[in-house]
Structure formats: structure tokens, C-alpha cells
Image (tube, rainbow, N blue to C red):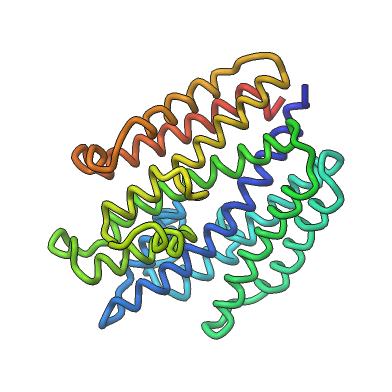
Length: 313
């Protein structure tokens, strides 16, 4: 059985790399949403901070929520443990700890990501450079993912990497949906308006799902988009897809180690709930309430995985 420290390093390396790409998509979505306003409005940038779960920390050092400060805080600020620069450095540090478990290609991809982003984020990013920097962050994350899929054995090392990725991805998509409905939307009267629909479509972009949604759906709207991002197992960023793969990878670990663990049972309970529900039931019971329960379950799963596989032993 793999040492817990190695398992934890692989898990967190991939969580951090997934978070870096998610942050880039959040900033892009925030920028697109400001286009729906006829006057400057910081609601979108508050929603970006809330989705990234760093709003309280930001307000401890910033009196007002300003676009330029939010972007800098999420991209570069080392005092923000979830900034792109912080998580990429943490991913590289974890990769160094578990380097013997990685192929040369994966290590070089992680190291290359850190070096390129360290250079790109060495100073505040200008408005003109922002699109290219966000694209670079996404490309570097994809480069590591490609090296991982293309060169790693399908063993416990690979499974811990994938479990980290899908745990982080499920959390991110759930937060995007929750914050959209309770922070971003100006008022109940805006539901179903042109602005509301544009914002929901921007959420699809932040989840890299706008083209896939258009292929499968002739009409847009909150219910169709929420259904796609929560329940559609064809979408690699949906919550149901994440949990289907979490269950599969946890199952592979059980087979390899010859022992069932509580984390698999927790995962199966959430997956069963996702498979057995529909979007109408979710909205009837409250989207916020449903997403909050998913976030709590996802957090509990992450903690149980750490306990089951003794990450800090």
C-alpha cells in the first residue's frame, strides 16, 4: 500500500492544478458578466470572490471590491492561499515530494507550469494582457493533464491524482451555481430576463461547457443549464460526472488494496442521489439548499479520503 504522504501529495497536486484553471475561468466569467451592466457594478466581482471562497480574506485587506484588485488577488496575491500563483507553487511542491511516483513527462509539465506562470504573474496583469494570461493558465493545466493521461500507469498513483481532480472540480461547479443564484442575480425580478439568461450562459463558459450545451439543447434557461451542470454525465465538468469518476477511482483503490473504505460509501451515497433526482425536484426543493448539501457532502468526502488513506501519517 502506498505511503499516506505520497497519496496525499498526488491528491493535492491535482486539486491545486484544477483550482488554478478554475480560477482563470472565474475571472473570465466575471469579465464577461460586466458586459451586461450599463454602469460599473461590483456584484460580479463579489460573486467571483465568493465562488473562490476568499471573500472574507479579501475584505480583511481591501476596503472596497474593485475589479483590478479582485483579479490581482485571485491571480497573484501570495497572502491568498487559493490564488493561482499560490496553488501552482503548492502543486509543484507536492510534485517534488512525490517525484519518484511521477513520470518524467508529468514532473516536467508541472515544473514548466510553475516557471511560466511565475514569469507571467511577476507583476500586475494589464487589461490588454489578461486574456493571454488566462489562456496560458488553462493551457498549462491541460498540459499537465495530457502528460498524466498519456504517460502514467493506471494504478493507485493515477487514481489518487484523478480523485483529487474530481473532488476539486465538483466543489468548483457547485460553488459557481450557488453563488450565481444568491449573490450575482440583482433581484428576483431579474429571473428569466435577458440579463439573467446572459449570466447563466456566462456560467456555462466558466465551466467550459457552452459549446457542449449548445450542441445538446435548442433552448437555454436556468433549469436546462443547471440540469446540464449538475446531472448530465456526458459533460466532464458536471457534478454527476465527477462523482461517477470518483466512485470508479475509489473502487479501483479498493480492488488494488483489497479493502473497502468509508470514503467509497460516502461517494456512492452522493452519486445515488444525483442519479435518482431530476432538475424539477432540485428546483422545487431549492437550488441553494441542494447545492449546499452537495458542497457539504463533497467536503466530508475529501476529509474521509484523507483519513482512509492516512495522508498525514
